[in-house]
Image (cartoon, rainbow, N blue to C red):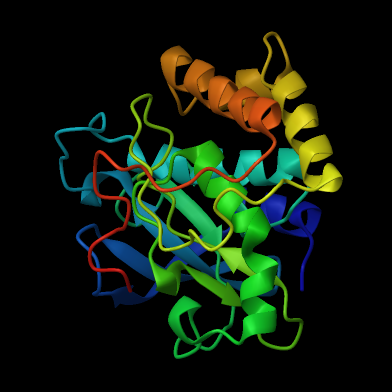
Length: 241
């Protein structure tokens, strides 16, 4: 598995060749080859111009939210989101470019073994932080060969208003363990301007959205527990898979 440092130049400067299109989903998403100096990487390319307008998210902002999710995952040290950048040029213009991870699409949240479900606490916390409006069961998987846990599809995240809809409510009202609390506290410090993370996020999120992210982080630290599902609105995505 290549490291982020190994992918950085290739993803920024490499040639993109279309390999196919993912047809499930409302936005245009493509599988591409990234060719650079004799190396060939698979990646998922989501062009900005392929995004369908939404009433509750700013237009042409979903690709940037994919990048913001990667930045938060890395700041937490959890490695949940595959390497992701905003690619300035592509076959259909600017868009997010994310490392493609080999996995079994038939093994997902709804048929995970109990031991694998127990590994989902960081994903549950991440979704609370990101205010993920669409965490489906198929968006979480384990890499073939390494069993590394990944989470994808974060275009509908980071809204300043409460939008959380997720299938992962397994840990509601459970205490957050000290190691996860430490990661949250570290993230909270990094979200304060003029930090590098705050500056990087401001390219993809509004200042209001970053402030709301910081507040959600603080709320988790103060309560010290996994939040329960809201009672005043739908808490699950549709469709759930």
